[in-house]
Length: 477
Ligand code: ADP
Ligand code: GLC
Image (cartoon, rainbow, N blue to C red; front, top):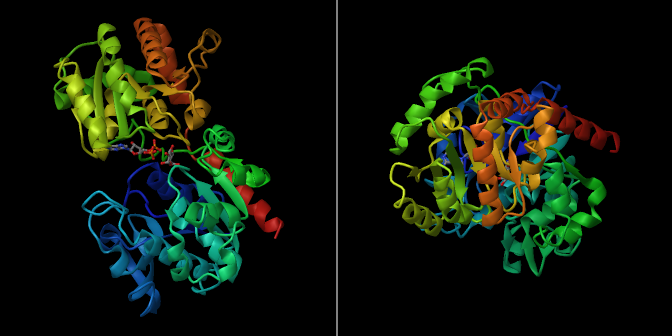
């Protein structure tokens, strides 16, 4: 079966978050299910530099305001179609934001341009690869199902990685999209008087998936539906929650070039060398005590505002904290001013640093993820694989992938982490106290680490579910 995956970021080429990890790893996992997947992405500078052995399969003088070529090639092991349109994508830095930190003013055109090409590929633009399914990731690919609905093409799947990002534009851009006037309605791309890219995808796709079963339920409620819950409830038969996996080759503590000392579940004492390396990197005092890490975008979604408030409790418990994060300047400032009171016990690196994120998982005792909502979350999965016990808010994919260390789960050796709810400072502090108690009981802690490392965080089961969904859609065709 041939599948076209459409994503705006793909690891290891361009990454701002977990979407890139998923778009990068899922095609290889689907290949094991007998699928041939090619990913279509924009020709950002990092992609153009990495692209090898490519051929030009289509070119045009006028594609959303400039010349464009569709290239087919490989980059860092990925099979790609790349839309090379310098007037849209040849810009440095973040794929969505300009140097001023604001969305590029032409983002509506940049991602409509990507979506039209995806639909064209679906209609046979590239004779050697005519996909039977187009799998669209997040709002940047949201218009694809609309172009297919109004112009023809194969079955489409819309995957929601984060409902908070919707691609909502004023009605005035509708005329630039090349869709028939009838598409501007409640059954099409219209959304609260404007154009909604994610809304269009949810409305026009043949199936909707989101990245965990709990998030699939949450987004059908008014509280967490971000204005799209009504649509999602109406289409509930088409909605599937399929939990993310991780690339277990890139994330493998037994063979990870980014960490100070590799290890397996049999020799967890070897993690100590990684802990020492973290202490040096973050200027922390050396010691055997509880070391918690955070690897996160610094945003309200991730509950980062709760962390500064909970620091005194963590310090009283004898814990230390190493934070790797980037994002909101105000949250960064709040964390930095809270930490000055605890020299040697709290360290922060405000950077985006992939190798350091591996070291933190390999040497910290626990990883804290106090998200207000979390479609899936990947850092807890990396934590499980690395024996870095996740402390998580009981929401979305965090609820689905971490087994709370309650008495029953502990005695069955099934527990893999600590969950807390509701997402408040008080509940977080309670979770930190539970963590410290568990950590003091070496056997209980080792059991958490071992059970986590045994849990299946690979793509195998979930890729099989996507494959099953693709087949079901084609049968229904
Ligand atoms: P989200 O996509 O909402 O940010 P996920 O947990 O799904 O959340 O994915 C986040 C990804 O980004 C993970 O691979 C995580 O390790 C990585 N990450 C987040 N912040 C940083 C950072 N400052 N440095 C390096 N990697 C980071
Ligand atoms: C989004 C979500 C995150 C999820 C990731 C990959 O960025 O915020 O929870 O893990 O997409 O699906």
